[in-house]
Image (tube, rainbow, N blue to C red; front, side):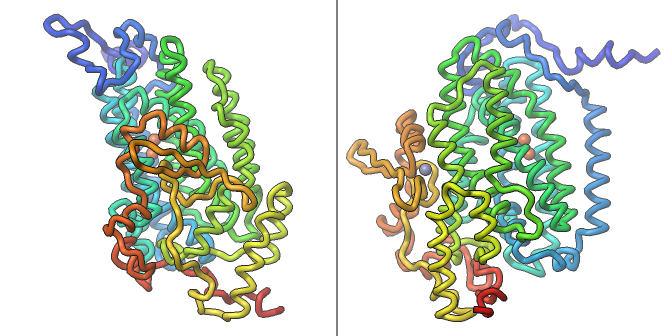
Length: 491
Ligand SMILES: [Fe+2]
Ligand SMILES: [Fe+2]
Ligand SMILES: [Zn+2]
């Protein structure tokens, strides 16, 4: 007679034992298992709210795969994508590049937890997480592969993390530390808690709703399918964090403060661009700020209180940056669009009115940038990309590796730190603080400017693009409309 599920499930998911011939420290060395190092008795309270067994996992995942493949068969062909707005396709290319191989790095982080996580139920959940992340790597690579022969910019779905493109340098700096170098405790706090409960709702709820509206059923299905997995393995976060808070609250808070800021910058770029600039105006519902307000600020702040942590010390600076940061980076990216692998849209009068309405406190300071850019297009005429493009290399933050865009157009928040004979510049106080917490880890990394000064990367912009950033005249970013906007010709 077969056992009932509840008779065997706990043995399958949570089975620990005492070591008779080896010390627990030797099985879980703190260097790889993480700190605080505590005996298993301190971790054995680990409970994941949604328990599952391997057989159930396989069955559920198979169903999800079937749905993705069915949608792909129905709307995943080149001509289905050709019907989409070019502006939205640019958002798709941005996501398609930054997502898949980061998910692949997350396989490694999960596998480390599947071996060195301190409780068996944690290890079991992390193993399912590793299988999830493998799927999250494969799905976008599969979907985008079809599109490469139509549009070479989609090739960046695979190329991106292997390149020295400045966005890739920034993304790797973050993802390598977050997903490859973290021990299972830091991974649980940074990835499972901050990333997968703090930020991915923004993607799931916000971006998939926009994709639906724009008519991109493939992207919508993919994001939703991925999110059902994220929601399951994200359970590791609060469960681990509860023990860390109980034994070393200051360390838990420091991890939170560090990772919230680092990930905020990533989301501001990837999701902020998509929501406020690359979604066609007719399909916009809420602004990036409104999505942030609802899904990150309100919900995440509540989950911090529940777990017994404070908001990060820079919370006011963070709130202020929601009005500016992604706008500043977008203006930089548009001005240097040939440095990236996707096109960028010039906000016209309609978009600028919408942005002014959504960003009442900051847009007046930002609007002159776009007035000036539009004026340049009007003087130069369509197709003359270089007339409306920056030519000298810009400065990068020595921590987040993104363009120095902190603060407002009137007052930047850059910080300079001199350490061991080297001068470092940071976009913001939190980036400088993160650097100071672990100088040895970060000080050796060279940003693009330092590579140019060392002679490892060319200073001439065109040379830099072709030989270092990996883009070609065919693939580098352009204005989505090549400067041909109806509103511009009408003037
Ligand atoms: Fe994932
Ligand atoms: Fe994940
Ligand atoms: Zn920075």
